[in-house]
Length: 163
Image 1 (tube, rainbow, N blue to C red):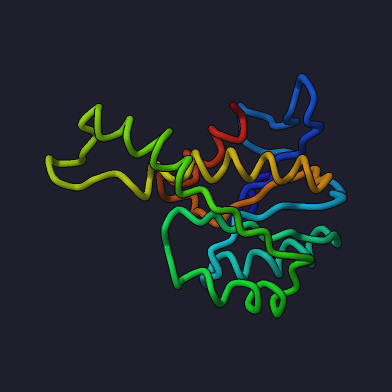
Image 2 (cartoon, rainbow, N blue to C red; image 1 turned 180 degrees about the vertical axis):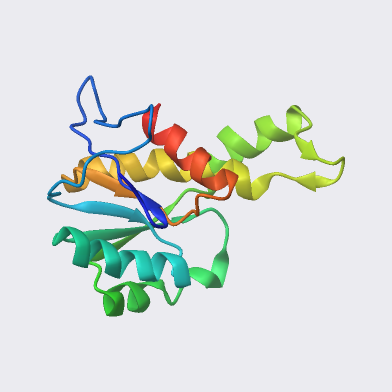
């Protein structure tokens, strides 16, 4: 289900992983057992975390990917706990991110307007892929993110979820 500032895709983790109406991008609001949220600790994902708990009446596991942010990750455990997350999973993806995403991007000379490296945007598929693995480990039947419907990050997350 596309929600105000998040995406929830029902999943069975089988052959047909998602019950997503691709024509409209929506799934009817259903009862979820558990949701895994791609969590940055910023305003958007903190509000979404609380909203998901209230709207779906189920636990939400916050997931943060460490792709080299450093000190930014330190306050996330407390923020996630205070916002109502069942738990916070921080996964070190630095090596995978550089090896499988950054190096291929550099080899392909993937720069925007000749000078802007696409490091942030290329991180989204890496994050979403790991988020799906965590959802499976947690027994979650939905995933969500905090990207707005106005940007490319939403597309990057959702296409990776559906891959």
